Image 1 (cartoon, protein in one colour):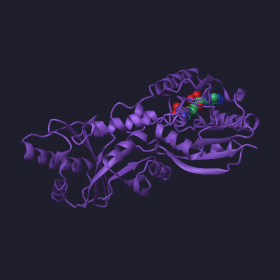
Image 2: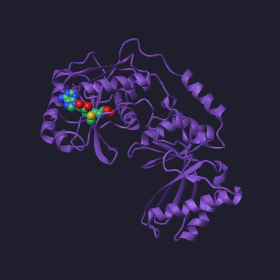
Image 3: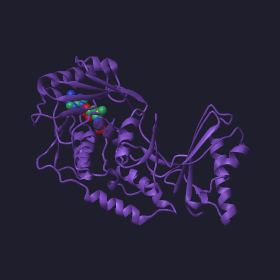
Image 4: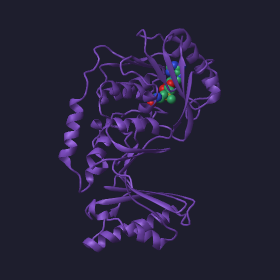
Length: 375
Ligand SMILES: C[S@@+](CC[C@H](N)C(=O)[O-])C[C@H]1O[C@@H](n2cnc3c(N)ncnc32)[C@H](O)[C@@H]1O
């Protein structure tokens, strides 16, 4: 069984694979929802600290087939869960079941919980409590066609929660998806980046963190593995110190420019940039698309306009997309412009032909990430 599994938003496992390779992980194996890798616990800490794309890092502990409750109980008992936490700590069990003889998720979760707490009781005389939020040991179970995959969540809260985003708008991108989109553009990490519809600023803040080689995990207060008995604080602290030493100096002049017609969003984006420590070189300004002129000569543009699924009405949005297409043509000649949208009809309103189309999921919404090279 592989040592670890890093999950990620659908369609981003290709770039997660490259990222894990760069981080020195071995025996990588890509699936639709993430990448398996082999490494020591130090490697697991490193991925939690440095990965921009991963959603969570799991430690798979069991894989088996079970058709009934007794088999399930017996198989769970084969792994010693008492080695991770003390009985006065807490556990949670998150179960997803598909096409199984035992189809009731709550029943499956209950049975797994019984098997685990009985292990503690037999060994120590007491048992851990179940706590659904912020448990010390989060156990994740995926069962498909009676095949069970049991893994421990080493991350705790999802890694997209970097800790800098205090303020969000109505339809913010998750931080790891935003970082994944920037990676997909193959940005050279030197050129300026513009987002003309920046909302709470996620794309630009992620790009600014990449520019500075800032490890996203340095902003976070807590990871799941830090609650466990095998946690080696000195190893973690060494990794954090190395990451901080590897940070690059910020650029001398602003390089990241965000605009939005909503002044409230601009205020939120500024607060978030400040929390992330990149406010000195990420500039946000209230501006509408139709009046926008770039403040630098050349760079890349990446944006996530509203697409109706969550905010806005389609007719009004048609005008927004027409303005966006017009803005690319007239104000961003020589730039590569990337657009994430989940609405094919609205994309047509840009009246431009894309050079590249990449399928990406924003949560459950199937989107296209499109590249327009403006000559
Ligand atoms: C989907 S949100 C962007 C979310 C952002 N990526 C984030 O992570 O927070 C789209 C943004 O476009 C802005 N917007 C809509 N029409 C605009 C226009 N004509 N000019 C500038 N901004 C506009 C909205 O105010 C909204 O904040």
